[in-house]
Length: 200
Image (cartoon, rainbow, N blue to C red; front, side, top):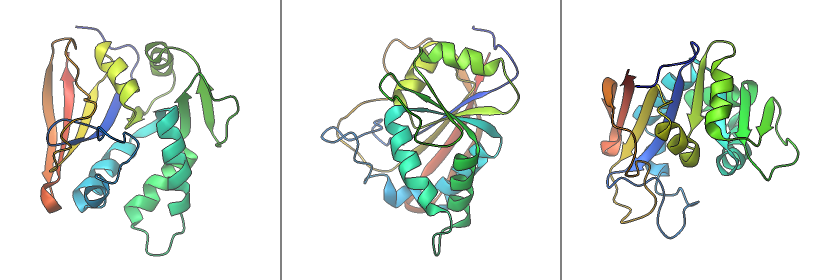
């Protein structure tokens, strides 16, 4: 087992279909299949429980553009759910690290763009101040951290749809290991929120 370095936890969050995919096969950027379930109470409460203890958001470029293009618009939106607005404010105000080899300038406040391997970046972050490092739905980042045994908390929301194909989060060849279930919640439409901690 790989020992943890520093006191910060690496927390990863990802939505998966019931057949194990995080994106549809024909259009990986289309997250329309997520939307009916992402607005359920269980999904909103699940995300809130993750960001409340986090002080850094870690994203890949594609997710950064999606998240930071949308979420700031929720602040002050009429009839916005307070949990959505809370997450939006946290995302705007927290320190963000975006992993990218193509972004030249920083289009968002409180954001650092780093062109280095994921594992190196996270090792550096773990050596800094306290608070969780929350990886938001960036599959390539999460996969690299799982392969390096650097994920401390694995949060998954399972939505009751089959996508019939597409990329998977858990590829063959990941290191063997055990996880302990920390919390589970079920909600509308059969949405299931699970949180596991790595047993080290």
